[in-house]
Length: 116
Image (tube, rainbow, N blue to C red; front, side, top):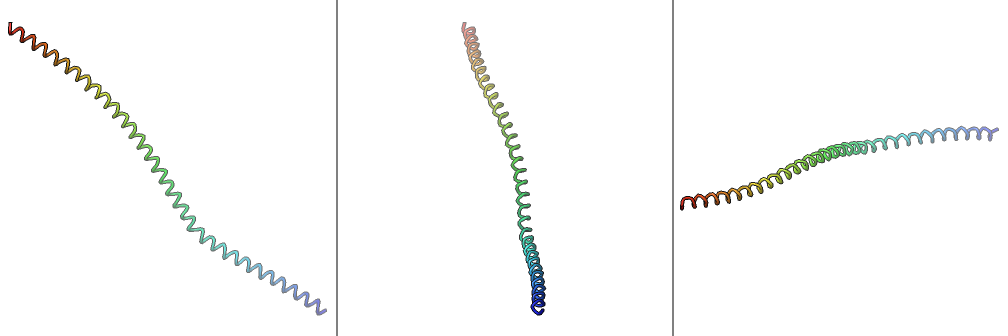
């Protein structure tokens, strides 16, 4: 009978110890969860900052690409204008040479007429 009571008492002790161990385990899990959450907050903040910087960088890159495209178009227009102006200058040089030759001929003709 005493042994049966001791066995029963040991069973109760074992159940209490198991319950205590479970409570201790849950307490430890809660502590670790709190610590993990606390450590996670700065990492989440860093991630958000990184994402915001990335969005700003992408936006700036798109702005620069548009500016480069617009500048390229402007350069092409200027190159075309310069080419046209160079052609006009060349044409004016030819016209000037022809006018100079015509003026010289006219001058010679006038001189001949006056010397006759």
